Length: 414
Ligand SMILES: [Zn+2]
Figure (spheres, helix red, strand yellow):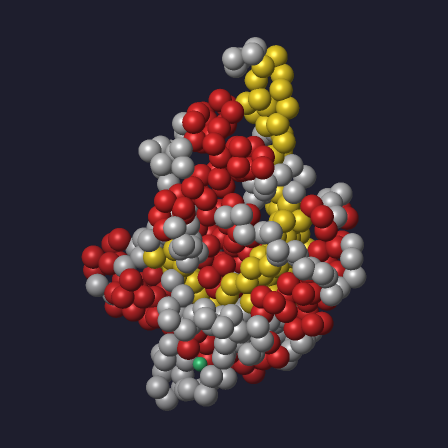
Protein backbone atom coordinates (compact mmCIF):
# COMPACT_ATOMS: atom_id res chain seq x y z
CA UNK A 1 0.00 0.00 0.00
CA UNK A 2 1.65 3.18 -1.15
CA UNK A 3 0.23 5.30 1.64
CA UNK A 4 1.55 3.17 4.50
CA UNK A 5 4.00 5.89 5.37
CA UNK A 6 1.44 8.67 5.09
CA UNK A 7 -2.07 7.80 6.09
CA UNK A 8 -2.54 11.49 6.45
CA UNK A 9 -3.76 14.01 8.97
CA UNK A 10 -5.69 13.31 12.10
CA UNK A 11 -7.15 9.81 11.98
CA UNK A 12 -10.90 9.43 12.25
CA UNK A 13 -11.36 6.29 14.29
CA UNK A 14 -13.55 3.52 13.02
CA UNK A 15 -16.45 3.21 15.44
CA UNK A 16 -17.36 -0.33 14.50
CA UNK A 17 -15.70 -3.59 15.40
CA UNK A 18 -12.24 -3.69 13.79
CA UNK A 19 -12.18 -5.62 10.54
CA UNK A 20 -9.33 -7.96 9.65
CA UNK A 21 -6.23 -5.93 8.88
CA UNK A 22 -6.43 -3.90 12.05
CA UNK A 23 -5.56 -0.29 12.66
CA UNK A 24 -3.98 0.38 9.27
CA UNK A 25 -7.06 -0.79 7.43
CA UNK A 26 -9.31 1.23 9.74
CA UNK A 27 -7.20 4.31 9.00
CA UNK A 28 -7.39 3.66 5.25
CA UNK A 29 -11.18 3.36 5.48
CA UNK A 30 -11.34 6.55 7.54
CA UNK A 31 -9.29 8.34 4.86
CA UNK A 32 -11.57 6.98 2.12
CA UNK A 33 -14.53 8.38 4.04
CA UNK A 34 -12.85 11.79 4.33
CA UNK A 35 -12.16 11.91 0.61
CA UNK A 36 -15.70 10.80 -0.25
CA UNK A 37 -17.08 13.46 2.09
CA UNK A 38 -14.94 16.18 0.55
CA UNK A 39 -15.83 15.21 -3.02
CA UNK A 40 -19.52 14.90 -2.26
CA UNK A 41 -19.60 18.34 -0.63
CA UNK A 42 -17.93 20.07 -3.53
CA UNK A 43 -18.00 18.45 -6.95
CA UNK A 44 -15.35 19.47 -9.47
CA UNK A 45 -12.33 19.46 -7.17
CA UNK A 46 -8.88 18.58 -8.42
CA UNK A 47 -6.86 16.00 -6.50
CA UNK A 48 -4.78 18.89 -5.14
CA UNK A 49 -7.96 20.53 -3.80
CA UNK A 50 -8.95 17.27 -2.14
CA UNK A 51 -5.49 16.94 -0.58
CA UNK A 52 -5.73 20.48 0.78
CA UNK A 53 -9.14 20.13 2.31
CA UNK A 54 -8.57 16.68 3.82
CA UNK A 55 -5.00 17.34 5.02
CA UNK A 56 -3.90 14.17 3.22
CA UNK A 57 -0.82 13.99 0.99
CA UNK A 58 -1.18 14.14 -2.81
CA UNK A 59 0.12 10.56 -3.03
CA UNK A 60 -2.49 9.28 -0.55
CA UNK A 61 -5.27 11.14 -2.35
CA UNK A 62 -4.17 9.85 -5.73
CA UNK A 63 -4.05 6.28 -4.44
CA UNK A 64 -7.43 6.41 -2.71
CA UNK A 65 -9.18 8.32 -5.51
CA UNK A 66 -7.96 5.55 -7.83
CA UNK A 67 -9.64 3.02 -5.59
CA UNK A 68 -12.87 5.02 -5.42
CA UNK A 69 -12.83 5.36 -9.21
CA UNK A 70 -12.36 1.60 -9.68
CA UNK A 71 -15.35 1.06 -7.39
CA UNK A 72 -17.44 3.51 -9.41
CA UNK A 73 -17.86 5.92 -6.50
CA UNK A 74 -16.28 8.92 -8.24
CA UNK A 75 -15.92 10.01 -11.81
CA UNK A 76 -12.84 11.70 -13.25
CA UNK A 77 -12.73 14.12 -16.14
CA UNK A 78 -9.86 16.29 -17.29
CA UNK A 79 -9.62 20.01 -17.79
CA UNK A 80 -6.91 22.42 -18.84
CA UNK A 81 -4.83 23.33 -15.83
CA UNK A 82 -1.94 21.88 -13.93
CA UNK A 83 -0.49 18.42 -14.26
CA UNK A 84 2.17 16.94 -16.51
CA UNK A 85 0.19 17.24 -19.77
CA UNK A 86 -1.34 20.55 -18.91
CA UNK A 87 -4.43 18.57 -17.86
CA UNK A 88 -5.85 18.32 -14.41
CA UNK A 89 -8.00 15.47 -13.13
CA UNK A 90 -11.29 16.81 -11.82
CA UNK A 91 -13.30 14.59 -9.58
CA UNK A 92 -17.06 14.50 -9.90
CA UNK A 93 -19.39 13.13 -7.29
CA UNK A 94 -21.43 10.11 -8.17
CA UNK A 95 -25.20 10.06 -7.79
CA UNK A 96 -24.85 7.28 -5.23
CA UNK A 97 -26.53 7.51 -1.88
CA UNK A 98 -27.21 5.51 1.26
CA UNK A 99 -30.40 4.95 3.25
CA UNK A 100 -30.74 5.00 7.02
CA UNK A 101 -33.69 3.44 8.86
CA UNK A 102 -34.50 3.95 12.53
CA UNK A 103 -37.10 1.50 13.85
CA UNK A 104 -38.55 2.67 17.12
CA UNK A 105 -41.15 1.25 19.41
CA UNK A 106 -43.83 3.46 17.94
CA UNK A 107 -42.16 5.21 15.02
CA UNK A 108 -40.24 4.56 11.87
CA UNK A 109 -37.84 7.15 10.49
CA UNK A 110 -36.18 6.75 7.11
CA UNK A 111 -33.61 9.07 5.56
CA UNK A 112 -31.54 9.23 2.41
CA UNK A 113 -28.08 10.80 2.34
CA UNK A 114 -25.39 11.45 -0.24
CA UNK A 115 -21.91 10.03 0.21
CA UNK A 116 -20.84 13.05 2.28
CA UNK A 117 -23.47 12.04 4.83
CA UNK A 118 -25.63 15.05 3.98
CA UNK A 119 -29.25 14.19 4.65
CA UNK A 120 -31.19 14.77 1.41
CA UNK A 121 -34.66 13.87 2.68
CA UNK A 122 -36.12 12.13 5.68
CA UNK A 123 -39.54 11.21 6.92
CA UNK A 124 -41.09 9.84 10.09
CA UNK A 125 -44.30 7.86 10.47
CA UNK A 126 -45.96 6.36 13.51
CA UNK A 127 -45.66 2.57 13.64
CA UNK A 128 -48.49 0.44 15.00
CA UNK A 129 -47.44 -1.20 18.24
CA UNK A 130 -45.93 -4.67 17.87
CA UNK A 131 -45.89 -4.71 14.09
CA UNK A 132 -44.06 -7.81 12.78
CA UNK A 133 -40.69 -7.66 11.06
CA UNK A 134 -42.01 -8.28 7.53
CA UNK A 135 -44.71 -5.62 7.79
CA UNK A 136 -42.27 -3.11 9.36
CA UNK A 137 -39.78 -3.80 6.61
CA UNK A 138 -42.43 -3.29 3.92
CA UNK A 139 -43.41 0.02 5.53
CA UNK A 140 -39.75 1.12 5.61
CA UNK A 141 -39.30 0.17 1.95
CA UNK A 142 -42.43 2.14 0.97
CA UNK A 143 -41.00 5.21 2.74
CA UNK A 144 -37.56 4.67 1.18
CA UNK A 145 -39.12 4.41 -2.30
CA UNK A 146 -40.95 7.67 -1.74
CA UNK A 147 -37.75 9.40 -0.56
CA UNK A 148 -35.73 8.05 -3.50
CA UNK A 149 -38.33 9.38 -5.93
CA UNK A 150 -38.17 12.77 -4.20
CA UNK A 151 -34.39 12.81 -4.59
CA UNK A 152 -34.52 11.67 -8.24
CA UNK A 153 -32.81 8.38 -7.37
CA UNK A 154 -33.66 4.74 -7.85
CA UNK A 155 -32.62 1.50 -6.23
CA UNK A 156 -29.51 1.24 -8.42
CA UNK A 157 -28.15 4.45 -6.86
CA UNK A 158 -28.35 3.11 -3.31
CA UNK A 159 -25.11 1.50 -2.18
CA UNK A 160 -26.04 0.50 1.35
CA UNK A 161 -28.79 0.59 3.94
CA UNK A 162 -28.10 1.05 7.67
CA UNK A 163 -30.80 -0.14 10.09
CA UNK A 164 -31.25 0.66 13.76
CA UNK A 165 -33.36 -1.71 15.86
CA UNK A 166 -34.49 -1.15 19.46
CA UNK A 167 -32.99 -4.32 20.87
CA UNK A 168 -29.62 -5.91 21.50
CA UNK A 169 -28.14 -7.77 18.54
CA UNK A 170 -26.12 -10.87 19.31
CA UNK A 171 -22.65 -10.24 17.87
CA UNK A 172 -22.14 -13.92 16.98
CA UNK A 173 -25.53 -15.04 15.63
CA UNK A 174 -26.73 -11.62 14.42
CA UNK A 175 -30.10 -12.38 16.01
CA UNK A 176 -32.19 -9.75 17.73
CA UNK A 177 -31.65 -10.59 21.38
CA UNK A 178 -33.87 -10.86 24.35
CA UNK A 179 -35.32 -7.62 25.64
CA UNK A 180 -36.01 -6.06 22.27
CA UNK A 181 -38.76 -3.47 22.58
CA UNK A 182 -40.20 -4.94 19.36
CA UNK A 183 -41.22 -8.33 20.78
CA UNK A 184 -42.03 -9.84 17.42
CA UNK A 185 -38.45 -9.27 16.24
CA UNK A 186 -36.95 -11.35 19.03
CA UNK A 187 -34.77 -14.21 17.78
CA UNK A 188 -34.89 -12.96 14.19
CA UNK A 189 -31.72 -12.96 12.09
CA UNK A 190 -32.15 -9.27 11.35
CA UNK A 191 -29.54 -8.62 8.70
CA UNK A 192 -30.62 -11.36 6.28
CA UNK A 193 -34.33 -10.62 6.84
CA UNK A 194 -33.84 -6.96 6.03
CA UNK A 195 -31.47 -7.67 3.12
CA UNK A 196 -34.06 -9.95 1.56
CA UNK A 197 -36.72 -7.30 2.06
CA UNK A 198 -34.80 -4.43 0.51
CA UNK A 199 -32.71 -6.31 -2.03
CA UNK A 200 -29.80 -4.08 -1.06
CA UNK A 201 -26.72 -4.53 1.11
CA UNK A 202 -27.80 -4.03 4.68
CA UNK A 203 -26.04 -3.47 7.98
CA UNK A 204 -27.89 -3.64 11.31
CA UNK A 205 -27.06 -2.16 14.69
CA UNK A 206 -28.75 -1.52 18.01
CA UNK A 207 -30.43 1.90 17.96
CA UNK A 208 -28.76 3.18 21.14
CA UNK A 209 -25.37 2.38 19.62
CA UNK A 210 -26.41 4.26 16.49
CA UNK A 211 -27.50 7.29 18.54
CA UNK A 212 -24.01 7.30 20.07
CA UNK A 213 -22.37 6.90 16.64
CA UNK A 214 -24.51 9.68 15.15
CA UNK A 215 -23.59 12.09 17.94
CA UNK A 216 -19.91 11.04 17.76
CA UNK A 217 -19.60 11.77 14.06
CA UNK A 218 -22.17 14.50 13.45
CA UNK A 219 -23.44 15.83 16.74
CA UNK A 220 -22.48 16.72 20.31
CA UNK A 221 -19.73 14.08 20.39
CA UNK A 222 -17.60 15.43 17.53
CA UNK A 223 -13.94 15.60 18.53
CA UNK A 224 -14.38 13.20 21.47
CA UNK A 225 -13.46 9.52 21.77
CA UNK A 226 -15.19 8.44 25.01
CA UNK A 227 -18.86 9.15 25.45
CA UNK A 228 -22.19 7.80 26.53
CA UNK A 229 -25.39 8.62 24.65
CA UNK A 230 -28.73 8.25 26.43
CA UNK A 231 -32.14 8.26 24.76
CA UNK A 232 -34.73 8.92 27.43
CA UNK A 233 -38.12 8.19 25.94
CA UNK A 234 -40.40 5.14 25.93
CA UNK A 235 -37.52 3.29 27.56
CA UNK A 236 -33.97 4.36 28.21
CA UNK A 237 -31.72 3.44 25.29
CA UNK A 238 -28.01 4.05 25.39
CA UNK A 239 -24.78 3.61 23.51
CA UNK A 240 -21.23 3.67 24.80
CA UNK A 241 -18.25 4.78 22.71
CA UNK A 242 -14.84 3.89 24.13
CA UNK A 243 -11.66 4.89 22.31
CA UNK A 244 -13.76 5.99 19.32
CA UNK A 245 -15.49 2.61 18.97
CA UNK A 246 -18.93 1.31 19.90
CA UNK A 247 -18.66 -0.91 22.96
CA UNK A 248 -21.08 -3.84 22.58
CA UNK A 249 -19.77 -6.33 25.12
CA UNK A 250 -19.77 -10.12 24.87
CA UNK A 251 -23.53 -10.48 24.32
CA UNK A 252 -24.20 -7.23 22.46
CA UNK A 253 -26.10 -6.01 25.52
CA UNK A 254 -23.62 -3.41 26.78
CA UNK A 255 -25.29 -0.08 27.54
CA UNK A 256 -28.65 -1.65 28.47
CA UNK A 257 -28.84 1.05 31.13
CA UNK A 258 -32.65 1.00 31.16
CA UNK A 259 -32.46 -2.23 33.15
CA UNK A 260 -30.07 -1.03 35.83
CA UNK A 261 -31.83 -1.34 39.21
CA UNK A 262 -32.56 2.01 40.82
CA UNK A 263 -35.23 0.90 43.32
CA UNK A 264 -35.06 -2.62 44.75
CA UNK A 265 -38.67 -2.42 45.95
CA UNK A 266 -39.90 -0.66 42.81
CA UNK A 267 -42.36 -1.58 40.07
CA UNK A 268 -42.00 -4.80 38.09
CA UNK A 269 -40.22 -4.21 34.78
CA UNK A 270 -40.95 -5.87 31.42
CA UNK A 271 -37.58 -7.63 31.84
CA UNK A 272 -38.88 -9.45 34.94
CA UNK A 273 -36.81 -7.48 37.44
CA UNK A 274 -38.04 -4.87 39.83
CA UNK A 275 -37.26 -1.16 39.94
CA UNK A 276 -35.27 -0.84 36.69
CA UNK A 277 -34.46 2.72 35.58
CA UNK A 278 -37.05 2.34 32.82
CA UNK A 279 -39.86 1.74 35.34
CA UNK A 280 -39.09 5.13 36.91
CA UNK A 281 -38.24 7.41 33.98
CA UNK A 282 -39.81 5.82 30.89
CA UNK A 283 -42.57 7.89 29.31
CA UNK A 284 -45.21 5.37 30.44
CA UNK A 285 -44.04 5.67 34.05
CA UNK A 286 -44.16 9.47 33.93
CA UNK A 287 -47.61 9.50 32.34
CA UNK A 288 -48.94 7.05 34.90
CA UNK A 289 -48.03 9.36 37.78
CA UNK A 290 -49.49 12.44 36.06
CA UNK A 291 -52.61 10.99 34.46
CA UNK A 292 -54.19 10.68 37.93
CA UNK A 293 -54.35 14.47 37.99
CA UNK A 294 -54.58 15.39 34.32
CA UNK A 295 -56.63 12.61 32.78
CA UNK A 296 -55.92 9.80 30.33
CA UNK A 297 -55.46 12.14 27.35
CA UNK A 298 -52.22 13.57 28.71
CA UNK A 299 -49.28 12.55 26.54
CA UNK A 300 -45.55 13.34 26.71
CA UNK A 301 -45.71 16.38 24.39
CA UNK A 302 -48.51 17.60 26.71
CA UNK A 303 -46.30 17.08 29.78
CA UNK A 304 -43.46 18.99 28.10
CA UNK A 305 -45.77 21.84 27.13
CA UNK A 306 -47.22 22.09 30.66
CA UNK A 307 -43.71 22.01 32.17
CA UNK A 308 -42.65 24.82 29.88
CA UNK A 309 -45.60 26.89 31.07
CA UNK A 310 -44.43 26.34 34.65
CA UNK A 311 -46.76 23.56 35.78
CA UNK A 312 -45.28 22.44 39.10
CA UNK A 313 -46.35 18.79 38.97
CA UNK A 314 -45.09 18.19 35.44
CA UNK A 315 -41.82 19.96 36.24
CA UNK A 316 -41.44 17.84 39.36
CA UNK A 317 -42.11 14.57 37.48
CA UNK A 318 -39.46 15.50 34.89
CA UNK A 319 -36.98 16.62 37.59
CA UNK A 320 -37.49 13.30 39.42
CA UNK A 321 -36.77 11.50 36.15
CA UNK A 322 -33.61 13.60 35.78
CA UNK A 323 -32.48 12.62 39.29
CA UNK A 324 -33.12 8.91 38.63
CA UNK A 325 -31.13 9.08 35.38
CA UNK A 326 -28.46 10.97 37.36
CA UNK A 327 -28.03 8.03 39.76
CA UNK A 328 -27.24 5.75 36.82
CA UNK A 329 -25.09 8.37 35.08
CA UNK A 330 -23.05 8.80 38.29
CA UNK A 331 -22.29 5.08 38.18
CA UNK A 332 -21.41 5.32 34.50
CA UNK A 333 -19.01 8.18 35.31
CA UNK A 334 -17.34 6.11 38.02
CA UNK A 335 -17.14 3.08 35.74
CA UNK A 336 -16.13 4.66 32.42
CA UNK A 337 -15.14 8.29 33.09
CA UNK A 338 -16.45 9.45 29.70
CA UNK A 339 -15.64 12.88 28.28
CA UNK A 340 -19.28 13.53 27.50
CA UNK A 341 -22.69 12.22 28.46
CA UNK A 342 -25.11 13.18 25.70
CA UNK A 343 -28.78 13.19 26.66
CA UNK A 344 -31.34 12.73 23.89
CA UNK A 345 -34.81 11.25 23.46
CA UNK A 346 -38.16 13.00 23.76
CA UNK A 347 -37.78 13.77 27.48
CA UNK A 348 -34.51 15.63 26.80
CA UNK A 349 -36.69 18.25 25.11
CA UNK A 350 -37.47 19.42 28.65
CA UNK A 351 -33.96 20.90 28.62
CA UNK A 352 -32.70 22.18 31.96
CA UNK A 353 -35.86 20.97 33.75
CA UNK A 354 -34.39 17.49 33.44
CA UNK A 355 -30.67 18.24 32.91
CA UNK A 356 -30.07 20.39 36.00
CA UNK A 357 -31.30 17.76 38.53
CA UNK A 358 -29.45 15.13 36.50
CA UNK A 359 -26.17 17.08 36.76
CA UNK A 360 -26.72 17.82 40.47
CA UNK A 361 -27.25 14.13 41.23
CA UNK A 362 -24.10 13.17 39.31
CA UNK A 363 -22.12 15.86 41.17
CA UNK A 364 -23.34 14.47 44.51
CA UNK A 365 -22.70 10.83 43.74
CA UNK A 366 -19.79 10.37 41.34
CA UNK A 367 -16.07 10.56 42.08
CA UNK A 368 -15.22 14.31 42.00
CA UNK A 369 -12.42 13.94 39.42
CA UNK A 370 -14.78 12.01 37.09
CA UNK A 371 -17.47 14.67 37.56
CA UNK A 372 -15.01 17.42 36.61
CA UNK A 373 -13.90 15.51 33.50
CA UNK A 374 -17.42 14.72 32.24
CA UNK A 375 -19.67 17.23 30.53
CA UNK A 376 -23.38 16.42 30.50
CA UNK A 377 -24.92 17.98 27.40
CA UNK A 378 -28.13 17.73 25.38
CA UNK A 379 -28.13 15.83 22.09
CA UNK A 380 -27.26 17.99 19.08
CA UNK A 381 -29.15 15.79 16.61
CA UNK A 382 -32.37 15.43 18.62
CA UNK A 383 -34.84 12.98 17.14
CA UNK A 384 -32.46 12.25 14.22
CA UNK A 385 -29.51 10.94 16.29
CA UNK A 386 -30.27 7.27 15.58
CA UNK A 387 -31.04 7.93 11.91
CA UNK A 388 -27.76 9.81 11.43
CA UNK A 389 -25.97 6.92 13.16
CA UNK A 390 -27.59 4.50 10.70
CA UNK A 391 -26.38 6.68 7.81
CA UNK A 392 -22.84 6.87 9.25
CA UNK A 393 -22.85 3.08 9.65
CA UNK A 394 -23.95 2.64 6.02
CA UNK A 395 -21.20 5.04 4.87
CA UNK A 396 -18.63 3.07 6.87
CA UNK A 397 -19.63 -0.03 4.95
CA UNK A 398 -19.29 1.88 1.67
CA UNK A 399 -15.81 3.11 2.64
CA UNK A 400 -14.88 -0.44 3.64
CA UNK A 401 -15.96 -1.71 0.21
CA UNK A 402 -18.40 -4.08 1.85
CA UNK A 403 -21.32 -3.31 -0.46
CA UNK A 404 -20.79 -5.82 -3.23
CA UNK A 405 -23.38 -8.51 -2.50
CA UNK A 406 -26.73 -7.37 -3.82
CA UNK A 407 -29.48 -9.95 -3.50
CA UNK A 408 -32.81 -10.26 -5.27
CA UNK A 409 -35.39 -8.00 -3.62
CA UNK A 410 -38.38 -9.56 -1.91
CA UNK A 411 -40.27 -6.27 -1.97
CA UNK A 412 -41.53 -4.46 -5.04
CA UNK A 413 -38.74 -3.04 -7.18
CA UNK A 414 -38.59 0.72 -7.40
ZN1 LIG B 1 -35.92 -4.06 33.43
